[in-house]
Image (cartoon, rainbow, N blue to C red; front, side):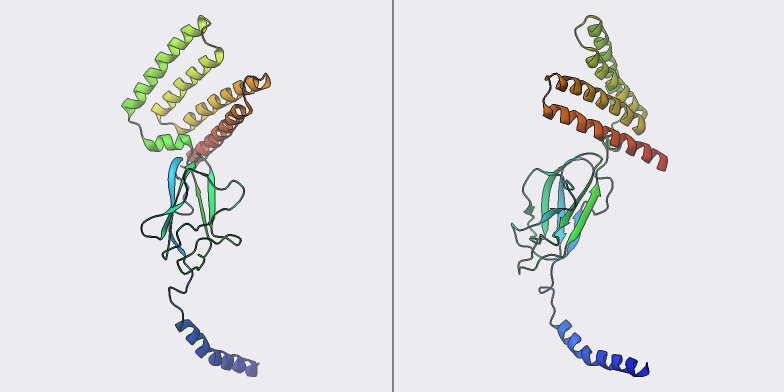
Length: 253
């Protein structure tokens, strides 16, 4: 046992000069670039939905026109609205995208199969997983913070529209579905004035379900396209997710 330990020490000592010499040959230029910053930060859970820019900053100047924004799983990346580009520093790559509400997104910035993020010496960047979650529409509405006066005006307008809709429904000018939409708008406006994210999400969910039911009926008789039906179905799924998130957020307070 003692002999084995002594042999290991002797081997390590013998290899130390080689390791030191190898280490001395390394420079920043010879090392691969690494991600030093992302916007949003990986792990962020409250990214606002809508059109935005995702930014990735590397430790070194990079090769322009070469990148690998790869999916982490199927449909893990948002819809891109423009081609990637580098900012003037040559280190920050920007991707303009459209984020849907209440969804988790992820990119592999380089991966096992794709490694086109490279510095100007041709070294591929170390792979990096960027993952984040967008807020729901209800949560985003609360964060946006319309003033009480504005919210009261919205409710008053919705009430006026409802009274008009009631008269139009009685006269046969509009359908029950149209009236239901107007009534839902009043409920949503009231919930927004009260600052209740759960009630906002619940009312919007009811409206989405109403829209989906109408689209389904129209689709079955050929009055709606497949795209219109799919859009209504997707909107309902999003509304259900937003409601679940609002309930969960309320419980965690």
